[in-house]
Image (cartoon, rainbow, N blue to C red; front, side, top):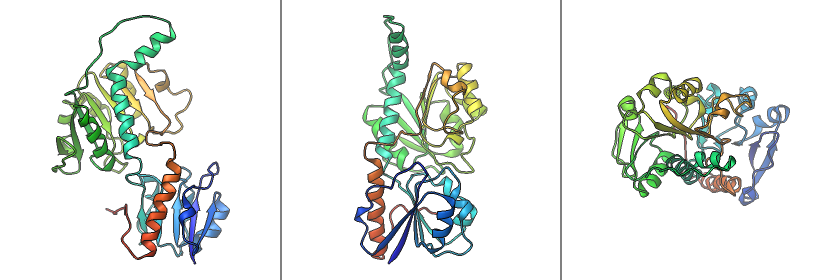
Length: 314
């Protein structure tokens, strides 16, 4: 019998798609601190859907039987607390599952800006008929900050509609999904060339606060920012200043330094900003797909095969 523990947020229902687990699995679901403290020392495998409460870090036991922790997200920054990160426990994530949905969100945001959809909706609300010329996106330049799995899917989709897409990664490399991939040190010069800047990078010590006043000042005047990575990569106050002085023509934001975004936050009032509630990759049926992805990986683990989406420390 293998003990699998599912850590869920209080408002969550049980993750669908787990019905494919073998009969030899004892699945337990916990949603509060007392239950987690009681169950965690006996679990061999932990599936985490609750990333925002910090509950796992608070309850991490000095002694446990855990061999594998699976995050039902592409990013694992919420699991980077030292006790887990420094342990021998294998960590996997949901890499790949949300790539297409996020890429489609980015394409939609690019088209929204190019065709002035926000302007159309404002005029419609006031019943104003106002003809304007809009932009073509063909041959416009996109900088994707974070040339990993998600960034590569974004590049594939944007290049398919005729855009020029350059990626940014830790080191320069050849990647057929992009027109070029430059090292992260090239950020200032690449920002100056891009009509659209798309953030798909994970949150790390290197990316936290990466988009500050200096980065926005380096951007091409009139460029647009699309953030589908992590909110803390962008200094929100610096972004507001860039929008207000007209350095940026707009921003599409799916992630924020503080979530939910407070009702009185000035970003809500910006006429050239689109806000969504950390949902860029969430498609109909995504929760079941997460469960099924874990089951597929569990069967590999049970058979002694290499796990998919293993997170490498370092």
